Picture 1 (cartoon, helix red, strand yellow):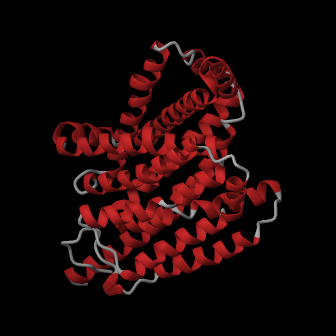
Picture 2: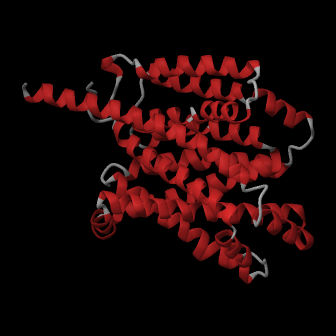
Picture 3: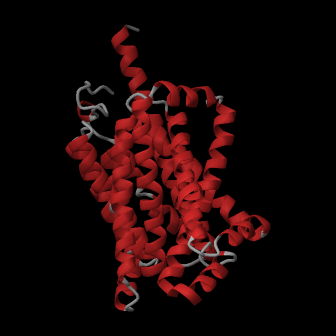
Length: 354
């Protein structure tokens, strides 16, 4: 086998592995919504909401509760990543990234801001103020934003067939939530903060995709995503939560309750596990199949959530779910079976090989 053929073979393996990571990303992201929803209805989060509502109203209570949920999720995800990188022996690589790749650090910190206080927090706000269907639809729109940004500013390219596949998947996933979204709008429960949270999620995930596409050029994925999550956790637990405590919000006592209440600890641990390994798959897929394809595959989390809901509750899906499932399947075929000459490198200046 000559050098060129070895190069092509290696590229095919990378692309296939990237798609596998993308599918696991969607699976874990869909699972993440289960404990994420449960945290709104169990203590100590419900007690925190009731306590803060007395002095700061429902909106203030919702904001503070979303902060604690987001912070708890980030903390447990970081613990998961510590275990992962200890197993993978990547702590030396993390040190090298901090010491030698200082240009990458600004991208990782920016990604932490866009993903944590913007996207994750926005998703929880959208759920609390507008409902789960609206929150899911808002999150599903981010691949479109992210693809546009990474194509324009990060030098990444996509074939027309890949773009068509991404758009088809997003439309299919929106169809999955169509009836729930219409119900939420018609019920009058769509408060302004719900729209704000939805926009935060859309642009937060999309902007994270842009900066990670830039940062992944020279950094190692396992080290990069761990440093990003450490930064995100630091934003919540070193800056935001202490500021709330100093402002007189009784948030710290409820932090303690998370780790003393077995039910709360279990739910938060499951959330961190799903989010942590979801992040691993997310960052590993980026350098292999590019930001656009990764974000497009991540939209499959909607289908995953519906399947698990059916498996756990036996609820029969609406007809819009079936239409959405067909669109998702078509979108996957469009993405996976791109013409060989169109499966371009994730960097615009490199030659496409499959």
